[in-house]
Length: 210
Ligand SMILES: [Cu+2]
Ligand SMILES: [Zn+2]
Image (cartoon, rainbow, N blue to C red; front, side, top):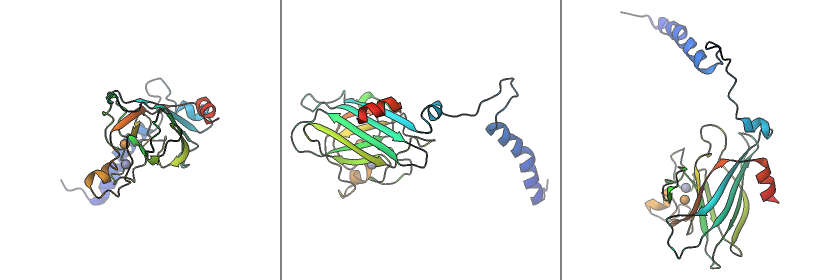
């Protein structure tokens, strides 16, 4: 059957619009008025989101490796504001050794830090352009205590909530290593410690930042 081109638009409107509206607008058809979907923490913390990641040693770690504990905390004022990250880690040996930290794709610790997958890479770009490529940190007195900002977000479908933070034994070559691994993960060595990023509270951020 021949359908004139203008009819296509008409039919699309006729059938498409009700589908679109029923999917995206609140519905009362089942007798329960649907509330708009808003994360409760946005109201609780005045539009700011917090996240928390409690770092523990990799359960697959060799005996002679340093056991690092601590926290990585996140705070983001709004979807379009840069995210602040606070690192408080302890348990490093005295040796001068840079340590890389990244966000990895999965919040899966079933095989220790080795099951967290590769770098979280939503834009399919090379390392070190991943949003969670925090770079290198030099421990002082056995500790890393730093604050920085990041392209990571806690809002929307690209949120890192439920993903992981991984601390590596070695230094990140920041894509300058000249091999394939360099553009994937920066050749930062094995995984010393990791944690899963969960929804956090303002209290925790305020307490730890003191
Ligand atoms: Cu990593
Ligand atoms: Zn990366």
